[in-house]
Structure formats: structure tokens, C-alpha cells
Length: 406
Image (cartoon, rainbow, N blue to C red):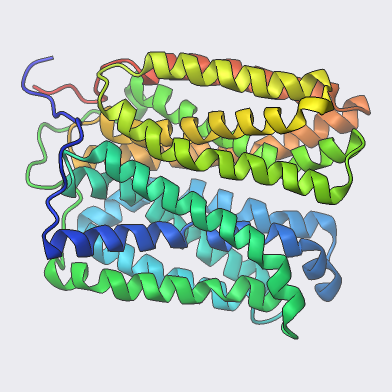
């Protein structure tokens, strides 16, 4: 590989007012990207009862955003190249607020259509944040990736925690639990507005486009990154959908099972921050892939064993591995590319196919349970996915670029 590849060693942030404002904008966008999703689960039974919908239809409230991510992510970099990253993100935040309001405003048609719209809006943030960070913080990619992934997970946990109590505290019930997050999206849009005013057409490619890239689907490295993103998403969404049910089937009451899953959520937070910083200081991340795989295997292997006396330990290890793999997956979009445009394109590919895989995970897990009549085959599915994640990580973690410098 010729030329001078970019370095991602963390250097001190230049805390000029403009930089601080941009940093705050990134954090508020990240705040807005998960709360509309994680607020649904705790009030799903209230929605089903109020709207008289089946469990299958209710399940689509989780699946529709993932399918929207898969459908929209490939075109997001093209739109951003045309109208600019700053403007694309601003419009996405407005669409997110509108989608949240629509979802909370009426019957099943508005519920589904609002969910679809907010899924489209979130896809823009998912795809563009890695490229935005690469463009504006080239010497602090690891630090900034850690900051925005922690911000996403922090509000994801907060939304899940306050959703049910908020529904019980007001006469609006589940509608206020889901609708309140529109306020956060509006605040994020206001905080982000100076970036649109300063850079009305901020190109995703940055100052230099470099050589014309070959299609990403022809790059084995791009596929490695894509499958790493997708398979860690399978682990997270399948865990969120089914592990509390597995714990209850093994004798836990619902309250304790919910508390156990909260350990998974909160255990993720420090590692979604630390791993991107650590990965940014390493040319080759395969050692991290190996360590994460070992932790995954211990955590999910413990759950598979049925030893519930150490359930809290298994949940913590599952959270550590999940948070670390998510942070590493988001970091790969910057580490394995040369320009912000390439990072956005790889992010689009990885998140499109990745969330399509994620949508299939909970379905397959449930199907294995129906087929076998117990949880053994389903939990074995977790172990197979971990091995596949390890193999993808060995490719994604190698010191290469999807488009080598000329």
C-alpha cells in the first residue's frame, strides 16, 4: 500500500467554540437515535391492548425500523454527497420528530407509518455519523466514536427505564411514553442548526475524493466489516428479544429477569467508549476480536449451561462483549477506509445488510424454540453466531483498506 495512510491515534481535542458546538451537536444526534426504539418494548402490552392488535403485528414495531435501516442505508451516502452531511442530518432529525409524533397520534395505520418514517430518519444518523467524525475529528476518531456510541446507549437505557413508569403516570399512557422523544429530536435539530448555517453543502467526501473506488461489494474486507456489523447486531437484538424469556423459563420471575437484562445494557456502556479509543491506537485489531470472542463465549456459554446461580455474571459478560463488539464495528467504518466518503459508503453497506441480518435473528431464535420445544437449540444458535462473528472479525480487524491508497 503506497502513500501515507491516515492515523487514528487520539490527540487532544481543539476546544474552540465551533468545535465544542459541533461536538455537542454530534452527542445530541446520538441521544436521538436509540430512544425511539428502546422505549417500545416496556409498553408493548399496553399498545396491544389499547389498539387490539396481535403479537405478530406488535412484533413489527421492532422489525420495521430494522428493515427501514436495511432499505435506506445504501442510498444515504449518495444523498449526503448531493446535499451535504450537515443538511442531511438536520432533515433526518426533523423527519425523526415527525415520525415519533405520527406514531403516537392514532390507530394502527399511524403507528406503523410513523414507525417506518422514524426508521428511515434514524438510518441517516446511523450511516453518516462515522463519516462525519472521520471528516471533522481525524485525529480523534476513536475518542469521538466512543463518545457518540456511549451517548446512544445511555439514552437507549434511559428510554427503556422510564417508558413504563411514564405510561403509568399520565392519562395518555403509552402515547406519551413514545411521543416524548420527539422533544429530544427537536432539541437535537436546534443544536445542529449552526452546522447547516455554516456549511450548507458539506460534502461527505471531504477535501479530497482520492481515486475512483471500486464497488464495495467487490472488496472482501468490506464484506468482513459488513458481517461483523451484522452478526453483532444479531446478537444484540436477539438477546433483547428473547433472553428475558429464557431466564423466566428457567425459574426467574419477570421482575428479576428484567433486572438481569438491565445488567446487559449497563455493562455495555463503558466498553462502547473504551474499545473505539483502544482500537484507534492499534494498526491491527484482531487481538481485540479474539478477546471479545472469548468473553462472548464465556457469557453465552454460561447461559447455555443453565447455571442460574451465576446468571448475573453471564449477563455482565454478555454486555461487555456486546458493547465492545458494537464499538469496534462502528470504528471499523473509519479504520478500514481512507476518506469520509468511503467511510459513509462502507457504513451504508455494513448497516444495510447488517440490520437485515439483525431482523432475522429473533425470528430464527424463536423458530428454533418452536422446532425443538426447548431452548437448547436456540441457545446453540447464539454460539454459532459468535463463531461466525469471530471469523468476520479476523478479516475486518486486519490492517487493510477497502480502497488502497494509490
